[in-house]
Structure formats: structure tokens, C-alpha cells
Image (cartoon, rainbow, N blue to C red):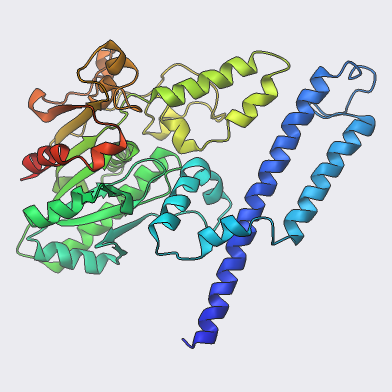
Length: 410
């Protein structure tokens, strides 16, 4: 393609993405305006004199002011390409940079469900990557055949991407390939979507991989393992659960799953966020503020209790606070399952087991322990490992953690 055409394409993509970023901020301003107006309508002593026709809307001159704010915001959003140049440039330039990927992954983690539903070009599509690049399935299965059928799929966690497996100049996947001779492929996905949605798509992707490998008629049997960090472990369990419901054939090739800091029974930070929603919603004046705390994705909300199936989402209103109503879904059968957990203290104690753990995931949640026998995940004692003085993200760059993974995979 001539340079002039390339420049035109880049400009079109930049303009499109700038528009998407602008629209996100416009939506945020409109939402915030509605929140403030709702509080105003409830606090105002004159609200009973000039009642509005709509709940949460003010009347008279006050209502006109809020309507004008909305109108001006929408006009600016449609006509201005200037206010968000900094953020837009960060998302549209240097698209191969680690900082660009990290920013886009973080945005997807927080509002990825909204991006996907609105068909935004900022929404990350699910792909498998190999050697740092997106690859088609044919190229990947050929690489696996050269590794005698052995492949390890690396599945990242919330707000992260495939490149962020590298921490402190160490990448577990790179060393698995180097030390064990396995092909390593990295899943990249929009972590803001419901976990069961990502699980379904992941299952379909693995089924395609298994199907295409079979067409190669390789003398080697497909030998698949998965190493999953944080939310990635829930997506993996969801994918396997989906496969059993739809008779997918890829699980017959799955040998091992290693979970790193996976919140099998939820994460206290999301539970705490939901308690904030609950308490704010209890008071007539503060209820509108709950809408601000609810600017977080379906994927984050699923971390409240560790939802991995569609049946877990009992309420269409994401921020209702029902008790844990998950279906009891055990670990995959006929698969060796391993759990790595960590604590930020020198030793395990009640606080780390029930609350803090690695800073995000408590020990009990990462090890699948639960007071209810139906939710207890049966990891064999020899398939559990707990590290001290290791944070949640540090699990990715810790050399001792890698030695454990290496020993379990070899």
C-alpha cells in the first residue's frame, strides 16, 4: 500500500478512536449530571412545590439548567475533536507499544462490557497469540506439531493482557517454552465482559484448535495444559463448564490446569464495593451516589462471588446484592488441577486466609476452600502451594513460583 494510503488509513482509525473516546467521556458527564440532578431533586425543600414529571428530575428553572448541561455536552461531544486528544493519541498511536496495550486493557477491564455492546473499536477481541504476535489457527497448530503436540495456554487476569505476563524481566510462558520445549500461546481477551461470555468464547476457540490439529494427522497426540492467573482461572473453569454442557471435544486433550491467585470464591474488594452500593442505596439522599460506584464492568461484578456460569447471574440488575447463589461447579474431572496462592505476610493467619491473602485474593478463595461442602474445590494436598511475601501481580514474575509451575508441568 502506498505511503499516502497508509497515512489516510491511520488518520481514519485515529479519528474513529478519538470519536469513541470522546463519546465515553460524554456518556460519563451525562451520567454524572443525572446523579447530581437526582440528589438535587431529593434534597431541595421546594421539590414538593414544583414536582417533576419524572423520578429523579428537577422542574422549573433548575430542570432547565440541567437540560442545558445535557444539551451542551451532547453538542460538544459531536463537534469537538480537541478535548480528548491526549487520551485519544495514547490509544491510536504506537499501537505496538506495551503502554498502549496496558491502557487499552485497563479500559476494557473497567467498561469492556459497554465497549463490546456498543461495538466500539476499543473493545478487545478474543485472540490467541504466539511469540508476541496474533496468529491464525493454522500457524499455531503447526507450531504445536513441531513441539510434539505439547501446548500451554497462558490466560491473563482482569485489566491485563498477554504482554503483562512479563514482570521483572520474567515471563512464565517464555521459560516454559524454553525449558520444557512446549509451544506457549497467550489468550488475549476483553476482561470487562461477563466471565461466562469469555468462557464460552474460549471454549469455542480451544475446540477450533483441537479440530485443526486433528486435521494435520500429526503422529503426536495433542497435549494441552493451561496456566491461568486471577480472573483467567475463572474464565478457564467457565470454558470447561461450557464444554461439558455442549459436548465439546477439546477437554479430552486437556491434561493440566494451574491456577495462580484465582478468586474461586470471590474477591473481597468487589464484595466491599458492592456493600458500598448497598449502604448508599439505603438512604433517600445518598442513593444517587451508588450510581457512581457502579461504573464498573460485568467482569468485575462477577468477581464478587466467583461467577463462572450464566445461571449464576440471577438478577438482571448487576449491582443487586443477593447472597452467594452460585451453582456448585466442581473442578474439571480427568484433569490434574493445581492451585498456587500467596500471602503478603510471613505466614498464614486468619486475616490472610479470609480477607487479605495476596492483597486481592484471600488464601481460602485461591485454594478453593469454602465453608459449604458443595462449593469446596478438591485440590489434592500435593497440588497446592502457598508463597509468603508475594503480591497478586508478583505471582507472575516470581522465580520460586515459576519453579513450582515448571515441576508440575514437566
